[in-house]
Image 1: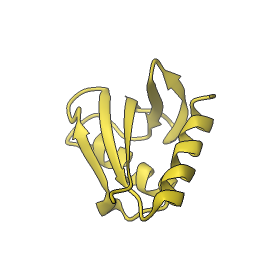
Image 2: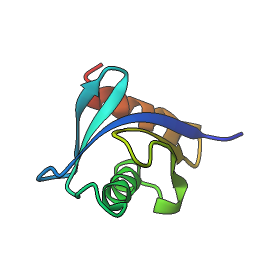
Image 3: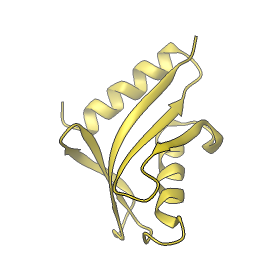
Image 4: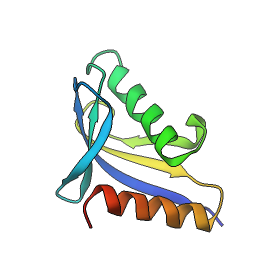
Length: 96
């Protein structure tokens, strides 16, 4: 069985630090310390997600939104417990 977290992101490139900063609608708002040129912001987002969820970067996938602020990530997790922990972390970031 696949243990994948699909995550809607509202990205804000050009920030001082890369961090999750709450919700924007149904999406997690993430500030990125990278400019929106040459894929640098997308690379920063993927690296941040891998660190935040404790998975190798190859297990984080950008499904939609490569050229916009609204993005969808797929984070492939090793088991159901990791998926549940990731969902709880996202809920905490979003203030739920």
